[in-house]
Amino acid sequence: PVSVSRISLESSAATLLLSSRPWISRPDPNSGKHVMAPLSYAPLDHGCAFSSDAIREGIVATAGTTLRILSVETEGAGLGTEEEAFNSNKVPLRYTPRQMCLLAAGKGAASQQQDARKIVLAIVESDYNDYGMEEKISMGFDPTGAGKSEKKEVKKKAEEGDGMDIDSDEEDEEKEEEKETDEGDEDSEARTTPIRGPFPHAPGHWGSCVRLVDPSDGCSTLDCVEMGRNEAALCCASVRFHSRGGEALLAVGSVTGMTMHPLNHVASHIVLYRVVNGERLQLLHKTKVEEGPVLALAHFQGRLLVGIGKTLRLYEMGKRQLLRKCELRGIPTMVRTLQAAGDRAFVGDMLQSMQFVRYDPTTNRLVLVANDRIPRPITCQELLDMNTVAVGDKFGNISVLRLPRGADAGAVDISGTRALWDSSRDDATPKLDTLCTYFVGEVVTGMTRASLVAGGAESLIYVTVTGRIGVFVPFTSREDLEFYSQLENSLRTDAPRPTGREPQAYRSYYAPVKHVIDGDMCSSYAKLSFDQQKKIADKLDRTVAEVIKRLEDTRNVLL
Image: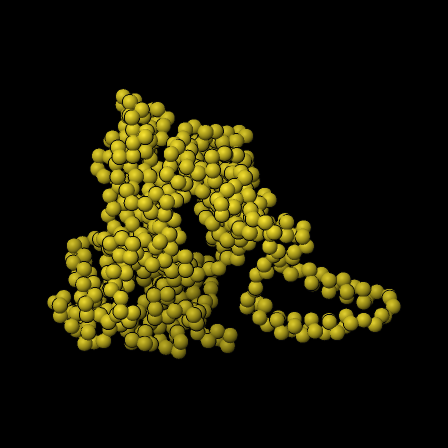
């Protein structure tokens, strides 16, 4: 059931709505319309307004057997904008994060179904042209700044003891330090400036670590394992080996002594960790590989699928190291991304787009099913279904590729003669169909298929290198498709262009836009003058209120 109570927000009346998640409904001070925004907090049972000397505008609520007093932060929350629906939680890291994955801590699949599973987050971090933490400390570098406080304590102890007074300039220096600390104490709690360590004198130096984070406890760090000297962890994945009883293990791909120009490395390894009691990492073993850097890992039918340079290899769990079962050589340049579903593996090449691979258990072989005819430098990918995958490249394009019907049947080699004739023929491999193409304008660094609202439809969410979050929403009815197509065509001709650039030409910067409606352009309808809105609404045979209501309904379905 939904409970409603009146509260005060920014000296104006608002409404607190409690259901599966808390919401706040209030009038927008700019437009005067009534807007709703989710409250970034745990589900609450009851709530009402609260005011005191410490908290002028607050909420007192109950959640289970606890009584909680809340204060809604309005400064910098982007009230009245699209940023109001999101919240962020910053986690300080030692190096640049490269990849992350979720792990279910537990001994096996049977025990995890019975007991409450603890979900932890594993993050691999690495920085080029940097020393590891152990090397920095051995050089005398103090990243926390605790050395100064220790020196001060030593001086105080020396002053307390019996000794001769010697005239020196230390008193003047201490007074200057006290003035600086008094001025800096006020801002020290508000911000902390990271301290950069010494720079390596030669290329090929890396600093890296593997961090274990608890998402349920404010993303607090549970464990942090520093990698070896000049060893960089570049990828990770959660894997469950059947021979291990279904226990979730953390597989990390690392490279030692890698240089960028020219691209070279000394050694590559696959490291397996076990999560002990959901709190710390335990090293199981380390497997050395020779074919190239390990940039992608994926769980595949109770085994580990690894992309090593131009080779795709399947590993089984061993006592001292991983055991190779089968492999596929001849990937065009280098395996960059990797996903698996069923008996298929979806391989993203660093320069030559996607490769669909199928595993044949009867012959224990990995067979190439289809690839893309257009070269794309893949940076991320997300599997939509067994035949469709969405990819993002480093030029800012997002494309949706699909396996043509009947292409998988041709990959089944009954007679055994296909391997003799098709191994060197690229024209015999089926090509993927391009369903959608859209130019975002920034390098797409990650994407996933998820729902932002509990019970809502799934959407394709992507993030860019500048931190922007975007969403592709699938149309479920032809009426919505026709409405937004007509609105987009009207805005192209009637809406003003601040930069004077053709919107369709911009979205087709590298390839013609295909089967994607420009949502940024459609959302600009609400910012037009009333005369322009009336002109566009007449073309659509609708009123201005109906067009705005349709735009708000689409946004509410997403957020």
